[in-house]
Image (tube, rainbow, N blue to C red):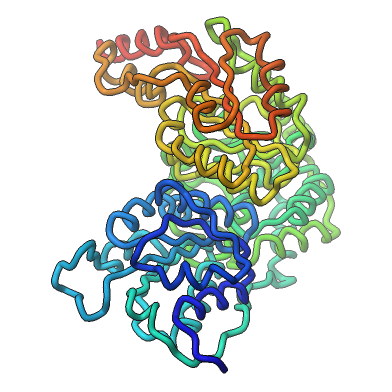
Length: 554
């Protein structure tokens, strides 16, 4: 064994764990790690702000199922990066964040940029630790990757004191981690089949971590064999081909009212991998935690999740992909629910019929056009805002891992996520939808996209306001506009300033030509879509929302 400094040990351990790309904003606190990466063969994607770097790492983990990795410096670097950690935690995404730290001998003096990371990140991530001994780096890194991927996946933080990282040690590397996965027992599968057989109005909800393209295919086989309706949670719409007659919609923000009613009316819920939380239940209003009134079968990789809010009749802690494969291969027969499933699908298709919005640019038509013309493997990303509801309602996701969006509702996420997606899949079309407010939170990462050749297409939906907050403001305090209007740059010109292409669309009929230009550009492209001021959501205008608020306030 050769003597190596901590940065070299770290880089070699990352290679062993299968890491091929990391995202970073450099800092003097982890110079040895940067040196270790120099000859490692691991791509170091240098970003413009730590929030963007951590969101790229999270998106990488979401796309690949393997931990996304980011490096940030101490103090402000770490605090900036916390936004991506929150996404990873709520979205159950495997991720490892390495944070530079002050020298060990300077602790507890409030040294330059000193932060107690165990205290700061303690409630935000699955595990946080500080590596005090260079020779223990393989041990800590191995444990970090194991925790990030086990049970319910999530983010892990390792703090690296700069003197520990630059010190040398002679230590053996650890092998790639083997993540334990609980398999469903044959009796569990048989019991699920028996309970389904007694149902009259079953509904499957499939989501959460640990899925794969094979699992999505198995879900479709299972649904077809038993003629089951399948819904998905918020921003998990790519878990089942939306063209399937068994796909009935998403239980997310602004969900189809007919699907919401169906969730209430079902007599058996089979939840595979998803958390049954406030978004899925519309703030716990659709399902009463104290009196569910229906049979609940809840399977999740983490034993802590079933029963967390709703008491299940059957609780399983097992790998979701393994369970759905076993259910797909079982031999039970469909029950008497053909009409129930068919009507659920009809409700979904009716919900997809475009509802006209005011103004010369109609987002419902833009998204519907994309749904018809995009390749089936095109990846769509977005952050948070009412603009995203047009994507949720009108686009059809036909392949697994074509939707990359934060279930945590984090603004600014879509653009960094699209860069990570394009770097991982350079031959696929990658589109980022972003509101004008959402895009401006991370639009500085256009420089990152240009530098690293991520030729993403960004569709900036510009209505000159924080639309979601304005909607709630008008409902609650109608006509009292405060803090929700924003000034915007010329987004197309800004993209050109960074070295990309930029276009502005003011009429729906001009969008297709603008998109063709963006597709052929071979470089970062921004299409700014200018909406009428009245456009607020897929179902309500600004005036209608204000009138509703005024009526409620009387």
